[in-house]
Image 1 (cartoon, rainbow, N blue to C red):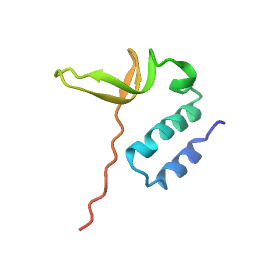
Image 2: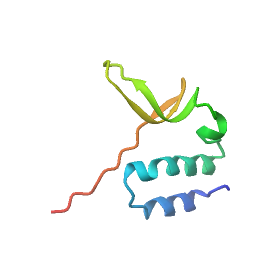
Image 3: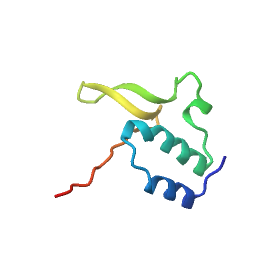
Image 4: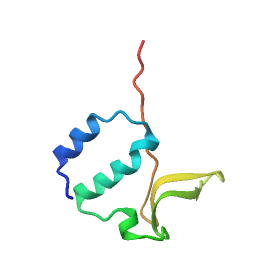
Length: 85
């Protein structure tokens, strides 16, 4: 179901979940808002577009990208917590 920019902003402004609990749903909502297929819709095998893709860093380490599309993007979602004094 399509989502308007205002609906997207309202939903995610009010969200207080941690990264792992919300990042995939947020990306799916972004895809819906922009009219793009989600990773699973576009690539059910995860060969070229996937969530939680294992990658090798340019420094030689390893890790996972929250969203990865071959030759296009690798996204790591970070949640910045406000500091309360």
